[in-house]
Image: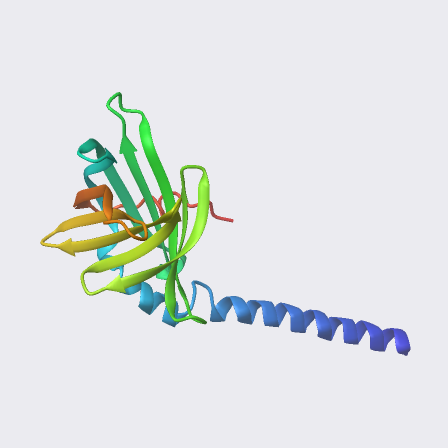
Length: 191
């Protein structure tokens, strides 16, 4: 009799675990409604972008490279994935960065996890009426990035800011949207 009770109790516990797991997956299969709504504000970024990146090498010195961005939603629109790439004169990759932007419900703000130049970091990102802004620490100060989207053009500037000195422009992107991109959703591996 006790063995039958144990088997029934184990079957009940197993069904609870299966039901709870299935219920959790059904409730948050692709992020929350709040996350998806927040990411919709940045939907203007989705697609393939082409143009140029001008990198300052010092006062009055700069180099311009072809630059692309490909951006799209994942997890049902609850996150945004970004890849930026600049090419050297010989066609090799001169710069390559990857980032994931998400909405943090606990802090009511966007966060960006960025990977570039062998480093990674988490940065708050602020959506503005015509783009976004964020900053990253740099030796002796920080680099402040401001992106605007107007008249079909994406312009992003990065200025090195150090206490007691005027800001110094270190990068400027000028991009136009080439079209949609399916790189995130193309050929997913299915179970």
